[in-house]
Image 1 (cartoon, helix red, strand yellow):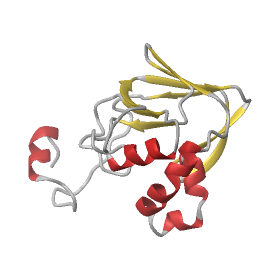
Image 2: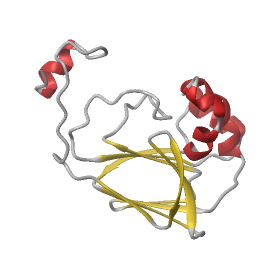
Image 3: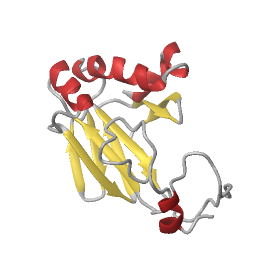
Image 4: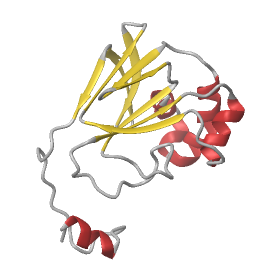
Length: 164
């Protein structure tokens, strides 16, 4: 689904509004290949969307549009969405219920399909990848230095992450 959203010309100007506008119809459309996500020991069959991220997004962020408190936990965050219609998709986005949504953490995720390739969104770009798509994480591979007084950092985050 993200691959379809990032193809939209409106995505670059207003990411959040574009996702919220397009996602219910994309989820309810039931188009595309049938997916199977293997998330560690958990198997999720036939999700319409799978979001794999470096560390988990907050529980209140169903569409992956918010910040993550940490990026150094060494686990992939995985959200899968399986809805039966536009109404259920809208309810998920409005956070009136979480039926059809799963959240997991794992060091490896494999997404397979009944098609040789699937559309995926990677860092705001739409790509076509050969199945199965395997996502892994290598803790501690990248080190980033950031200013102590950077925008968006909460003072309590400095204490919990050791940043600064």
